[in-house]
Image (cartoon, rainbow, N blue to C red; front, side, top):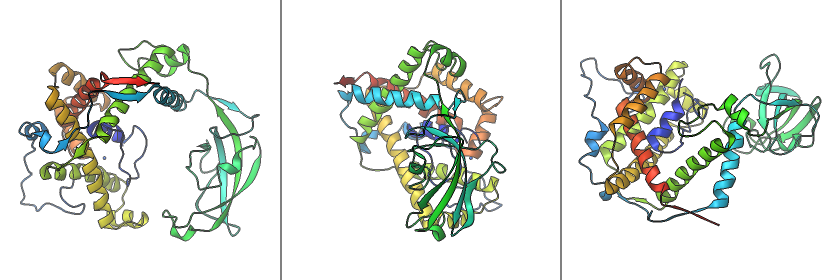
Length: 382
């Protein structure tokens, strides 16, 4: 399951993952179905010839479909940019394993702790409520304040110290969807705190050891790494500024159906790879097939809306695709997916994502070109 979320980020021009899949992560993870998740082609049906997105786009007047928000001057708060940069840098540091084990400090909000825990309801252990040394020898890392666990669990650890075991009283929320039988019930978790993860400050040596060659346009220094993160945040914030002020007036139906199929493909692929039927999956998620299709529709519309807006800007400003950029991105994908050529890459992408590499690459290049253009319009305010 490789590069699933990255693909979506590139195609959507935003970091967006399918909310109803079991595949997760910020950078990892993919049978192709056309109209409905359970539909199958008849044996005598011929496969439809693939139509390139570029061939669809070339005849579109994007101004017919969207009203683009004013981007003549994009006002962004300097403090907001700096605060988000600090958070992103720290988040990236915490994705590495370069931490020390703090076994002396008291736990505070924002700390990440390594724990074992056993959950009980009415004095009995319940399914899915435990992480033990036998089941997970390395323990579970939990960021206090993340909201990853039910209300009361994380707050119940604040002020506690590693090396001890505590009972934390909690209550499952009403309408708990993951398991309706637990909704509203009290639970006690016996939690052993192993240690607090203590990460170092960002430094030149840390960058060289953990983020070396993070971008060809920057040096392997803490200053340049921070500058790179900040510049990338400005790009995404500038795009968000314009997109939220834009209006989608109409969705081209053929493109909408195409993108809906692209959303179904990785879901169905993932379920089949794990031997799970769509019916069973939806039942576990307390979803109906109608709910599933509504999710597909919503995400496809969000996706297409973004494509229409950045294509409208590109069309108006004469931002196009460059051959050198295409070759560079293609080479990076061939390396990333261990594909010998574009034909092999297309087979992978068709299976995992329901689209061809050319469409993904073109979207990435055009999106980047628009973001670079919008970034030049940014004015940082006090």
